[in-house]
Image 1 (tube, one colour):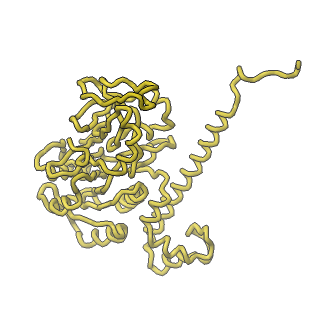
Image 2 (cartoon, helix red, strand yellow):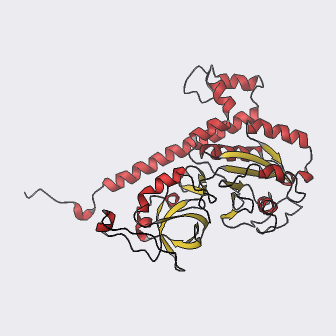
Image 3 (cartoon, helix red, strand yellow):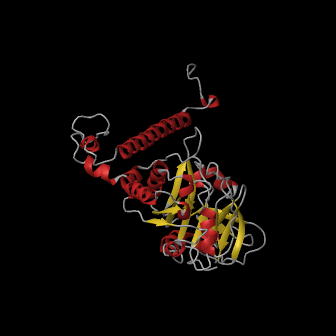
Amino acid sequence: MDLKQLGWREYFDNEFSKYREQGLLPGRVAIENKHSYTLFTEEGAVEGVVPGKLLHKKTSAADLPKVGDWVVFRPVSVEPASHEEKSGSQSNKPSALTDDKVVIEAVLPRFSRITRKVPGKEHEEQILAANIDTAFLVHAFDQGINLRRLERYLVMVHDGGVRPVILLNKVDLAKNLEQILNDVKQVAGDTPILLTSAKKLTGIDELKKFIKIGETVVFIGPSGAGKSSLINALYGEEIQATIEVRESDGKGRHTTTWREMIILPDGGLVIDTPGMREFHMWLADEGIQESFPEIFEIGANCKFRDCSHTVEKGCAVLEAVQKGIIPKERHQSYVKLYEEIRYLNEEIKKHTYMMKKRRRRPRFDEITDDSDE
């Protein structure tokens, strides 16, 4: 495999430079298993494991390798460099890979990522995919286009430094197409919108134009939206399992149960993700500004700099809502998402403070009584 075709670029080459002299090699995470990872490398696919020292260093699960990550690994046939080798007295060239599992030594910094809060009460980040160029946000006409969910996707994709493209799939089943398209355009802003049908191959040629050699795309959307079917259409044959959606309620089971990176025949890489019932916001200050540009633009004229755009007198945003310049539903969605992000920020600050406080607190066996001195 050619590294550039796998998404290698100057950014990663610079980050990897300090590892070359140690005899280490780069690989890209294609599949994340429970206790190991499938890596794409120059010499093919290998299985990698994370050593205990890397697990010990992590502060959260987001620090571990995720699908799309570039990692630094040590071939089994290469021993860790000695002090003399690290100082440059001897060369430690990489040997050929073996059938044994390789050891992952580090994760290279990500240039982009798509993330959400872990479902449930935990205040922790979950990386859905890393080092992504384009995210296809898939919604299906037979399920109904959920504008509020689409706004959530756009916020997190923008915040992660990824280019979004909205796919309105199963257009052959569309009703009130023009009205729905107008509603989506109000949410999309400058984000491209494609009408697709994997079954009829509608829009597939347009979709291919967004996938270039050496770039990585990801499909995100609810279960049954047709993500795997679109990937099969791009690939030219059925490589991802699909399942019919129930006509009674437009729902389907999760066909894709893990994240996987696939190399397309015409170049480019695609990551399929499981359908998501929940998409909780993570920290996304920049993402919400890019997703609601009209509110921030009009909000610059508010009387108060820290205006919440909810009850303040002299709020330019509220005035725009009253005049119909900003749709009421759009404003309500912004307020809800903004409050969700603000609340999460506060909770993380509290959690961080408590953890620091615990670390500063001396253990019982460290406490000494100086009264007899």
